[in-house]
Image 1 (cartoon, rainbow, N blue to C red):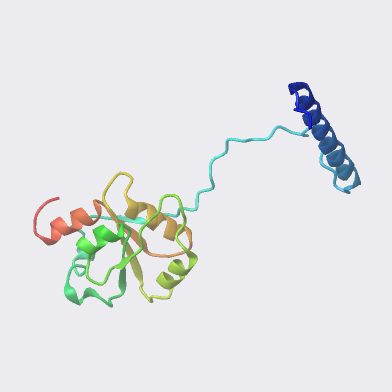
Image 2: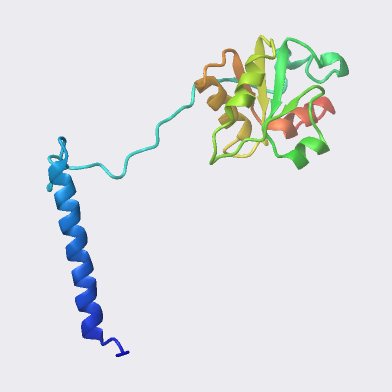
Length: 171
């Protein structure tokens, strides 16, 4: 067996490319809607991702509408509290009766989670986030509103601000 020379490697690569181009051109010619060899118009390659975000109201921790959220009897009320923070932060402190729906900036909220929120029977959804910038609560609230949920609000300052309000101090 003879060792391959750089010249024979280049020859074989060019031959393989030629066969591939001929095969592709032949198959394209048999199509009724053949692909053009030159684009008929310029393509936009840097386009923004489609926004699926809707509008969500902003609440502050001292909002009277939130007064009942921190009471232990809140669970089962007409306001559904969604906690957008991670599992560890949720386990450390959360609003009584809140549901944990950790917000992922890279992946959409699963459809079954959205369906469960819709099926909850709540008349209002308040999303509590981490209070950072961007706030995970705001982003999740906007995503839920964009998926058709009505009466969605997010808490400015997130869980840290609400916890401070519950303890009677400023965040």
